[in-house]
Image 1 (spheres, rainbow, N blue to C red):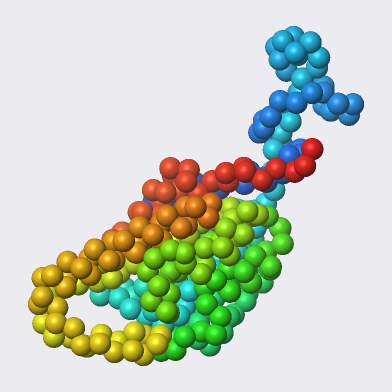
Image 2 (spheres, one colour):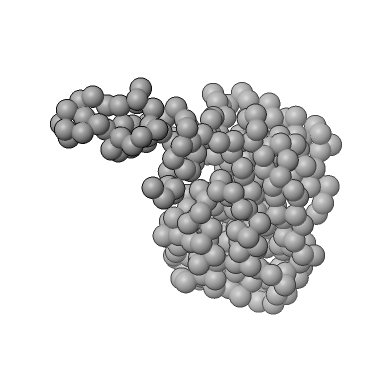
Length: 307
């Protein structure tokens, strides 16, 4: 299927399975002119007298006025992991394929007048930036990338996920939404905290609303009994002979994998980001849209201007 055909199919799937866009009119990150009430403060000269709360004024014995949250177009930046570990899949698609479709779906869900999306895709070939454009245009470009540009299958990038998150934070000057699509696997094999991307993610989340979409394949969680196999790390090239018929080995593997994923979820949560795990063997679009409908991806409104 061509990239245009794949994009049209994804577009139809999204439109049929969701009632509305990702954020609608995005809730601004600063106090200012808007329609949604944010907080009650003492009246100051120049405030709109129509926003005086007379009940609160009577209780406080001085005028009290509702201030509103500013409404802005939503600026989205998306970080797409195209490293060698993403070129793996044993179910309906490789992780790289799923990541590309996820990235395009985010663009479609953020598609509203004035909304823009910029992207950063990184692999062993280096980072590739795309300037912010209309979210729908960005979604189409991401789908083309996923269908035409194969991810690296060997090699470790000079700059890893931590460096790319920092680069994204430097580029995204205006507070908005940042989405990270990755398997969150370390080339060094780190499976316990602290991960090297934790601090950069925390810095990013201090200024932006951040969503981490973790891409997982079922064989990364459970080791099947297929006898003797040779496993190779796609980024470092290291090989290991493994006898998967040993039930104790499979149990230890499952336990270590579960502990690693729990540590990843905890690290993302402590960084102040929203975390969602999508699997290659499940209906990822249903999982994504369910999270959208639940409101998990809406602005938390934590950052406010100084008053």
